[in-house]
Length: 328
Image (cartoon, rainbow, N blue to C red; front, side):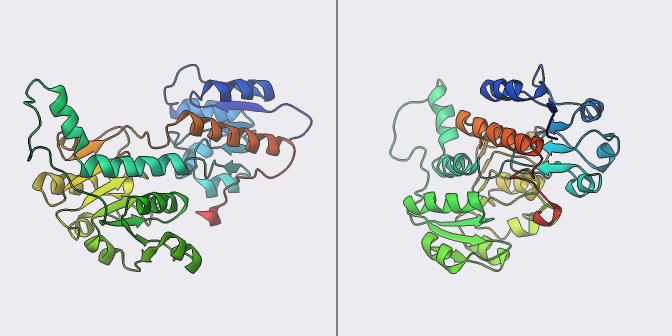
């Protein structure tokens, strides 16, 4: 829309540097607090905006888009995942969708390794012991965890983040295995020294650590269901920094309680912030509040990508990170 300043509405608080830059470039309405918008607030925002800057907490489905009116022309999602947006319906209504791919890769991969170490070395349990009044000091047999060198790491989803995890894991001496919708090119597979498994069942049964790095789609919902989780070794651990819906959380909780899986490190949950209370009680589960990509550097880079997408659109061109249904 060259020739006039775009009206932009932002649904959540963003880093100060990002908000300041947006105010310089656009006619922007910022969120005064960091609460999630209600459906009615989202409809109101879409009705008065050329561009909506949404986040993964904003569920923009077909019903909501049907109430959007005619003004909205771009949903610039602040995040790489767009499973919160009905991209097909948006396209049918002439609304473009963009995202921020690639920005969270390194930060999320760091968190995967942090969780692998934290679970296998029982760091959360050790923290509780050290902070209690009952620690009597070092003992040769106390708080024994496991060594990760030599262990088999299974990566479910070998995109940007999965490959970044593979590179880190190799430095720690882990053996890298993976299952992906498409097999990697031979030269990438060789570079990562990664073994491909066409059968997810067979890979799950053989790895010592399983890292979930695939998106949430209809085909990945409960991909790790009770049947598949039961294939894992009792000594294995599972780490999820991707989407909570990929794992059947109730089944995982039951197996962790029964000792059928040794441990879990979870940064995402099936029902968002509504974590299974029984899961919270488990000493062998480390739970984080969706902070895998939460670095200041990463959040600012995400904002810069959002601004670039909006500015390119304002200049009459296709946003560089436009998402189309065929990509999903």
